Image 1 (cartoon, rainbow, N blue to C red):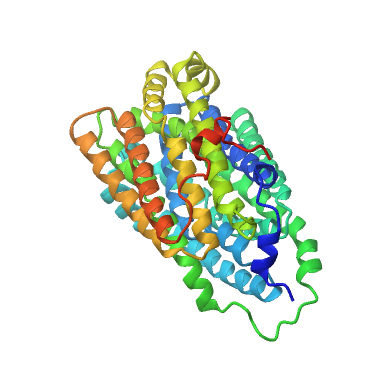
Image 2: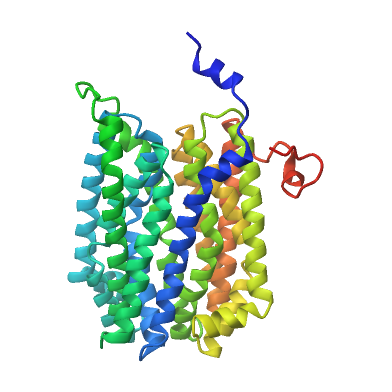
Length: 458
């Protein structure tokens, strides 16, 4: 009998074409999701009291995303572990527990005095935003539950080799959210925060339903005939694998509330809180292609020379994304995007444009971070990832509040702080990767990505 190692040694090395085929549908999904926020902000910009509504929507969305942090890494966990019926059933049970916990937390924040403690006392949000933020949280009650279920099912789809359904599901989500925002903004008297929160909720619920429908026959076909007498994955083992990733996301999702709290104390706080969600939407667009890298690295980790090939591919993606951000930031596309397309007033557009120019290295840092996370998760090295996020968060806090305390414009400080934080995490993960014998740079270096002769075309 041929061992797995012998089989891998005889198989051809992982090619850039193979990575591309696995990456494209996932990257398309992230890109489509990245345009969701800017589209909804554009709709809100055309409703009465737009500045206040955009600021409130950004706060409500960031708090809801913070609550969902334990479920975000279900995509990576499900992709890595959904290898048998027993594992699938354990993952399903675990997901249902997360659904209950995050839904309860959303309820407590939206409907109890916990709102006053978090939003008013801790974050220091201006009084004019209290009521709309509270309404937004209430209308997004089932946001985390829908996200948990669809990420669990999407991870199974990726593991079973059907990642194209992930991209199609995102189209379903956008039809629900963008279509909902358009219809509600044009044909109802609802406030901007109600339009934004309802649109997001409709979109994610529709995507979760789609993932359930397309995954069901594949799960029955792949896992339906296996015995279930002895679980391969215990609940404790699942917790040990998942919770460092969940903690990483939890720490990372402190980022929006921390930035919001700092912006609330910056010069012109309401303007800064309105401009930042729009800029952050653009920055998310440039980071979206990199967000697909961890699942690709996990799914292809069994291929020969996968680490070096994925590093090379991640570098290429980061360079292209950084180039796109530079194009938008330093050309007339900036005016077109912020003022014409999104519809920001000139003062807010100028704030966002300045921040974009200060964040040019963010996509490149994100590419390295995402590639490292995937490669480490594939080797089941998850605990150092939580430490890496803690280092990133500490960097963000120091830079963000130092800049605001010095009186610099809040949006520009936020862009610099996020870039510095991601760069710090990239350095930390490089150290961890070396300790686990994972290549930190592509074998043929960055020159290969740029087309120099050292690159061997696949």
